[in-house]
Image (cartoon, rainbow over all chains, first blue to last red; front, side):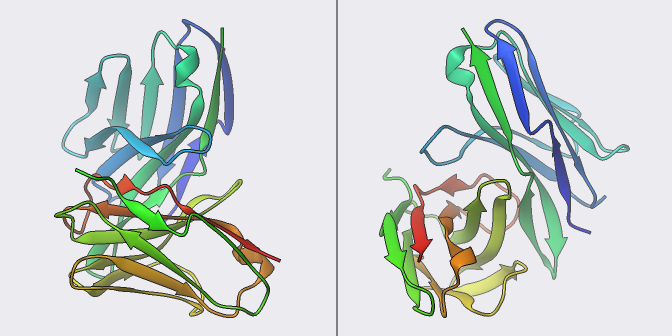
Amino acid sequence: GENVEQHPSTLSVQEGDSAVIKCTYSDSASNYFPWYKQELGKRPQLIIDIRSNVGEKKDQRIAVTLNKTAKHFSLHITETQPEDSAVYFCAASIRQGGSEKLVFGKGTKLTVNP
Amino acid sequence: KAGVTQTPRYLIKTRGQQVTLSCSPISGHRSVSWYQQTPGQGLQFLFEYFSETQRNKGNFPGRFSGRQFSNSRSEMNVSTLELGDSALYLCASSWSWGPNEQFFGPGTRLTVL
């Protein structure tokens, strides 16, 4: 199948707190997992990605973890700031017909309250 | 480098009409993917083109079609528009096909009345 489930759909945190968004995927052959941030009225932009040969990747306040056995991956944002408020999308590569495509989750609207 | 551009940015059409959207990828990128974005549904994959060939297709009816030109620019066409086709259509380019970073354009907001 080609399904990516993302939770929660909305998340509200206080400035300085951590935020965690979780995704599960169905295709055990998936090997690329990007996270995109989309601010209101703007285009999605890649914030971090991870490949299946790595269990964790960190970039300043953002980290992604991958559990291939359980087929889930998570985005962790520490020390949240108001500018982190946006919709976040996870995605997983799905093999189809000799090629691969990205299947996206439905998004998490993160609100960071000052 | 200039980013991904899409034209037009906004379109209003009526049911039954057809529409063509255009996407110019980042210079040097040869893969262009198209997505439909609607509230609550996230980004749904339409198709991917690489070197003028459709490499992958999503689960959309045949009314949705696309093509890619030798300069990597891509167009998508929707015929016999339905109300449910109202959405933001995003294209994304990458240097090659397959799982790698995609750079999105600003999108074309299509409204079908």
